[in-house]
Length: 161
Image (cartoon, rainbow, N blue to C red; front, top):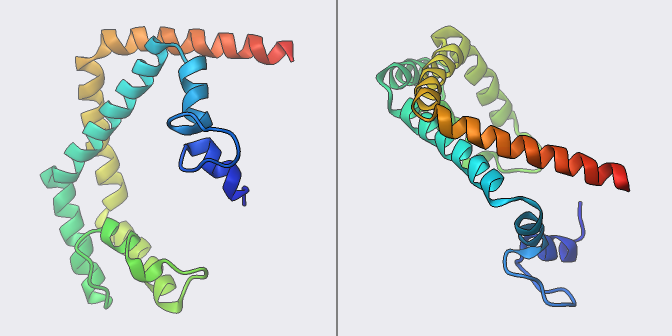
């Protein structure tokens, strides 16, 4: 586990010793080392991934398999509306898995297999990702160039050390 002082300095939540820049050392390094075009490209990819994920969650094919999964889980004694609800159950925030958590996880996998949740959700989200790529292809290509330049510069710096 990293030292709490180190984490505070890295993420900007504290001031151990010297003044910490806004956002912490990580933010300062990011701002100094990553050129704006590369940073914008990475942000854009993250935004498009978020868009496709959100769209998939509201797509009828995904909500349909989630409903089937929920029904199957209920038959096994677990009451969750979606796989994400089971995954995020606050009762499972423990140091060690409880018997209930293990039973829920086993049922979750069984129900996902039975209702084809993973394949359906992945296919739906991939389709939305393909839409995003098609709509933003030129922008993504420019972003790829910026990121490729950043990686090349980083490798050159690493070789100097």
